[in-house]
Image 1: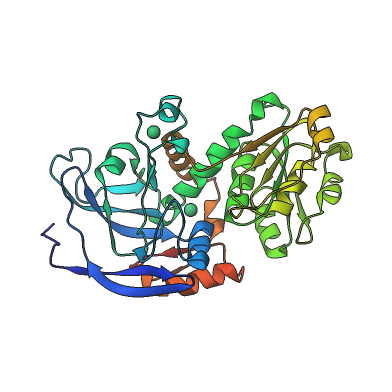
Image 2 (image 1 turned 120 degrees about the horizontal axis):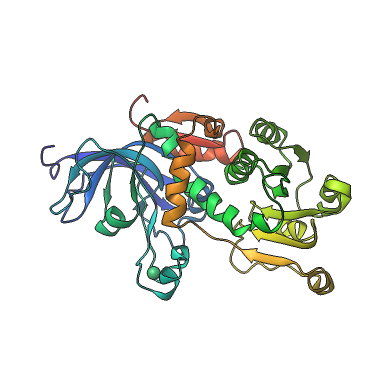
Length: 359
Ligand SMILES: [Zn+2]
Ligand SMILES: [Zn+2]
């Protein structure tokens, strides 16, 4: 690959709340330990919608900035000292890289790394991958896996981390599938449904949107229940569980405090609540202390992914029987990122594949 220093590329720059500019920006040149990846597929995500509406993210990015964080592509060029990758290699780059030295990293909880670096800028033609990401969270795409499917690695890695946190082995085994309620049938809720159903568990999904519930059923949900918005739905959802007792596990995949409360109200004694959806800063939820104590509830917050679950996600996506494609609602070029995000907000699409060529 020739020197790219003098070339420019098209990139989507987030400049503020609901404001994206398509700009010609320089194609970066990889320095020592870095690689330059030509993006072949970048998928839109609920987090992109959040940063688009809010004009940034306190941890992940400050405007003006290139953004987009679910990506798959080809190595265009490699900097000095990079021996693992060469031009033409198909790779997925995760959107975070841990330090591997802090206490949390040493405990295997790299998602809580005290110096976690984030990577954004996938809604562009090329992405410069810093050395820490090249070393610790870049993965070769297995043969036969499309770029579009491979781009879903990041959200699926979050979901697999979330499923680990559900401690399923506590509640059942291969002969007795575990009953799990998923609140929310957006892309993350649907990936929970897909991965849990694929592993043979009994999944009940609750969401106000009938089209999304249909997708959940296609992904293997045993029951898809239409609920009203705004919370107060736990009694209704609990009725759908075996004997009306509540599920062993309830997962919130919405990030809405009222739905967190519904998840807590949906499990049976001894059960576990996985609060996976991140709520807005400053919000709170009231707890029925009597219920939590006497029912020995486990209530967990769960965040992000770890390099181990990124690898697992890539492996699961390589299995053609895993129907991840149902999450991909369409394709559009970088210049249409804003329209893609607006169609997600209007709930007309789940995920859109942003790319610069035909896949
Ligand atoms: Zn994402
Ligand atoms: Zn660390």
